[in-house]
Length: 474
Ligand code: CA
Image 1 (spheres, protein in one colour):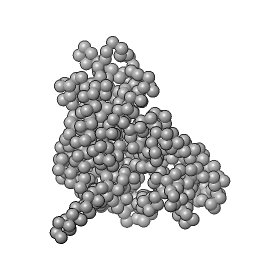
Image 2 (cartoon, protein in one colour):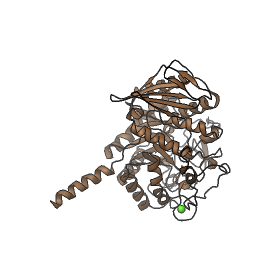
Image 3 (cartoon, rainbow, N blue to C red):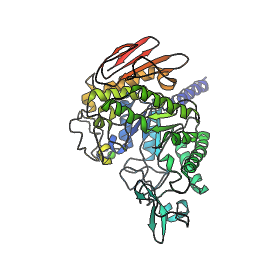
Image 4 (cartoon, rainbow, N blue to C red):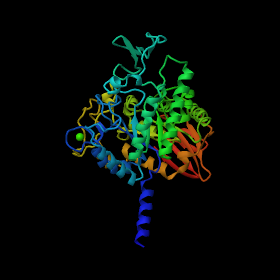
């Protein structure tokens, strides 16, 4: 009898340990999020203490920006792929975070920048064959984004597409491939649920092959990587960063579960700032999903408003709360796996340089976990979590309502997508449907009311009709 109870308990534990899915992902800059030990630098323990906040917000998955040792504040130049940055904590802290997140049905994915390492990574001296060195075919004058990609080093040159401090790895070397797969399996073994793959389209750098070959070779690497990851964890989620045209993104999806979509956030911001055709916005979504469907079933899209490399959406929308709410309406009624960037839900401000778009999360209310790593020059009037908590009309509570609504309606997340005709091309209208449910979604992003076949929709408002029941989100 005892054995049987134990067995049931074990099964229950196992079920609880399986994360729901990577439905809505929350991008966290650990350094900026929450501090546990009073040194002013965010850390994993601090993040763990905020899991109540994150599950109440209603996100399903956390994407941690790089947590590995690195000489930079941002961590995208890694010096050791198998350890935790000591400023952020220990391996035990990560294991505790994983256990706590999983007990809430929340997944955790790690940012894995493996296109390049830090130039301070020991490999650069000990395993030079891991990197790309100029041979007689190399065009040493080749420029990408205005910079020469071949960097002088002694009497030779190495390839570094982003900057001198981040030499690109050579994925023609099978030892590099094996090493990177081993690293991924190491973290999956620990219970990590997947990876956000930095610079996924640059695995084969620009200039040595044709543009088409570069993408094909990068895609074939991700296929190899995904096969290995899925063999370890069938639910492993691979999210690729590809700031590329639609055809290139689609090609890379051969080895990814989703690609981040830089176009859709820009389109939402443009509609809200300058107006335009909602019908055109919907047509572009349909084209995107159709291109993806040729490579991978479902809607393997990860839309977002802005991320850690872009001016914050609240700033881009002129710090107007009604526009920020509308942008959230549009993002969180898209199919696929939307991503929120930390602080977006409270309207944090920020514009380049990068440090200013990665500033401390504003908890307020005397919360000592607020970090001090880089005090913001832009967030002088931003309302904190504590202040917004108390106001039912706050942006934060708007995000909470939307996320709860999304969770309650499966058609919104994985349904079939179809443009809808509601007799008005200014509004963005589409339907999402599953066999059980059909949702009609109409966004009026303009500053005036719009007449539609579903009635008048007030300015800056979304109407959602699910099987005849109507909801409006102002
Ligand atoms: Ca700390």
